[in-house]
Length: 126
Image 1 (tube, rainbow, N blue to C red):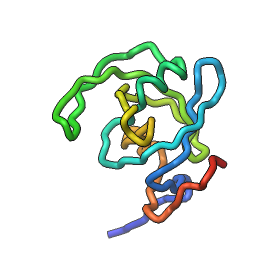
Image 2: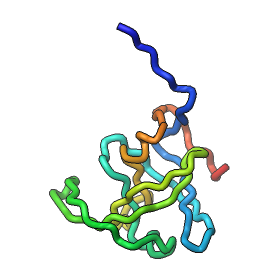
Image 3: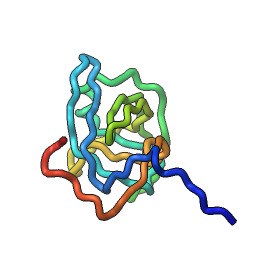
């Protein structure tokens, strides 16, 4: 059995990362994001979506979370994570009570990322 894997084109990220969110006006907003390989879809705070001008709403997705099930709207979002430029679906949630306005799930992680639990977030975005 061969265990040949090609990792040289994948970015190594930690559980917390700086994410550049591309606003409709062309400016970047840089925020800390939580990396969650257990989440199927990435999620973004509803107020950040408004600030970025992302939209229109593309549809809805039923989400299972710690509180049961809920239905969330979906938008396309343009981000840069660890040097990779990504256009992907994000579910919109009220994340105001959470520490991180963005949660990066498997739909983004499949774009070429490996998670190193020992990797620390730099104090300021590089």
